[in-house]
Length: 108
Image (cartoon, rainbow, N blue to C red):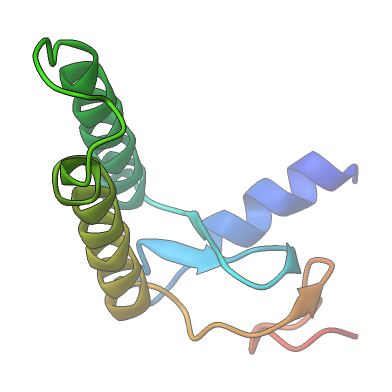
């Protein structure tokens, strides 16, 4: 079986219905259900919307100190919120190198 077919099978083997499963390589998560994908797309859309709204700012110096409050702080808060959702609705994070061969998530 090729890698992508095994990876799709790994994502579908989700009896706990986690929204996010561990990545196959490294540390982190990947969306595994439609809820996980919607959460990820909503995050990306909010970041893009925030960036596009900054493009419309007409008056003022673009290097002013207000950039931290109007641009960086919302991105930081959205990212922290995403991490909280992913941590609560996803598998326990751990380093992984390859698709696990057994059901408990340990690599062989």
